[in-house]
Image 1: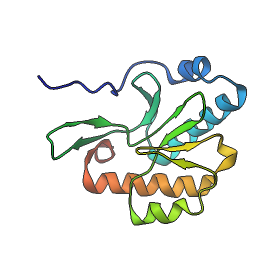
Image 2: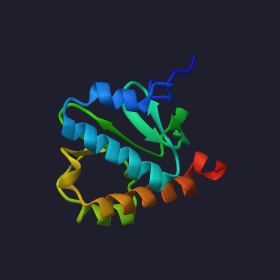
Image 3: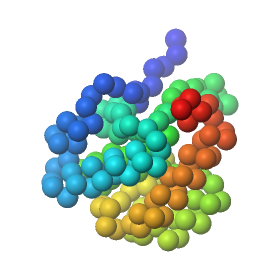
Length: 146
């Protein structure tokens, strides 16, 4: 029996999630700003993915192992210690953009930032747009269904 992915789109309200989960006013303000920016750049409304990820759009992936599923094209989570940004695809353009991104840490699947003021929003936009272009070229995605 195939294992069900725990990160999938839900019907939970993004606004209610942010208001109940973000533990301070700055994190709430940054979360709502990210919702606005990522909605504009992706062309998709925010949806909750799993219990704590706010995602925009979706794409279908399939690994050589046979594991497959759906994931948001762009996303973030206002975690307690720092934001997790799911906006990066490993392309030459994105690697170059990291140099001027600001203060961050790179994880395996995400970028960690403390607050929006630590990064350059114009670089974040370029990174998001490059990631969307990469996903459009390499995966089945909702971007083709607009």
